[in-house]
Every structure is written in structure tokens, then in C-alpha cells.
Image (spheres, rainbow, N blue to C red):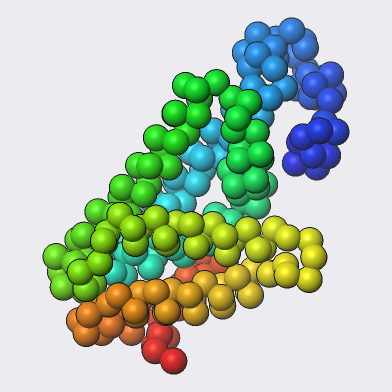
Length: 209
């Protein structure tokens, strides 16, 4: 109901009726309508984690896995747009209203992802695939840039990007960023790295343009 009607228009009475539970039961478990939304946001984060894990577990060199993780996030955005909206839009809109422990819990999950990306960049540096840049700064930039790009796919004006456009722009962006920090060895591995695909398929064309 929240997905179809929006959070403001979805009534707790209708949600309870659809779930075949009493209104009091919802308040008992979630505290409020906002608490119910927070539970959905945490569910969305769990799903997002599963997508990202696919990227982290891809076979390949560290720089290839870094690119695969970006592709996994793209698939999450395209295949789970409602969950993406919950994490990027709804949570940020209401973060000030949530209890500190809930905010800390969600922030810790996001930080864990950033830490894994940072570790992957360090691993790529150890493998001499990425030149000496600050790993934490690079990870945070990739995270912020990717969120900003994927949010373009959720716009309703002329700046909206469809899945194919998102994939094309992401590929260009990853070329700019990864090739900009890659060593010669890293560039060689990127040439055969699977490109992110919104439909869950992978292709292996030469990345150099």
C-alpha cells in the first residue's frame, strides 16, 4: 500500500485490514506508522545487502570485483525500485524523527558496506591494480556518486534516466573513475571485466573507449 499509494496517503486502518490484523497489533509491534515504515526500510537494506554480496563474491581481481559491486547496486535499483526509494529517499526524509538507536543501527550497516569497499580498494592497491589514493575517500566518493546517479532514475522530469541510460552512464562513470585511478595492470584487468547490466546479465566487451 505504501508503494502504490505513498506513505502519506496509505492509512494504517487499511494496512491492518489488508494484513488481517488489528490496528492495535500494528502499534504494538511497530509503535507507529513511522515505525512500520522504518521496518520496511530495514527490510530494504537487507535486500540491498544480498545484491551487494553478489558483487563482492564475483570471481576476479579486486578491481574487477569493485566494478561488479557497482553493477550489483545498479541491479538493486532497477529490480527493486521501491526498496531503493525507501533507503535513499524516505529514510533521508525522516531520519530526524527516528530514535537514535535505530539511526545508529542503519548507519552501522551503511558504514560496513563502505568499509568493505574501502578494503577492496586497499586489496586492489596491494595487487598493484590501483595507484596510491586515499582508500576511504575513494570509497565514499564512489558510494555518493553512485547514489546520486541512481537517484536520477527515480526522477519524474526530463532528467529521468531509464535503466538502459543508467547502465550507459554508470559504465562511462566507472571508466572515468576506475581508469583514472588504475595502474597499467589494473587497466589490463578492466579491459575484460564484465560491465554492469541492469537485467542481471553480464557482458565482457573491451571497456576502453
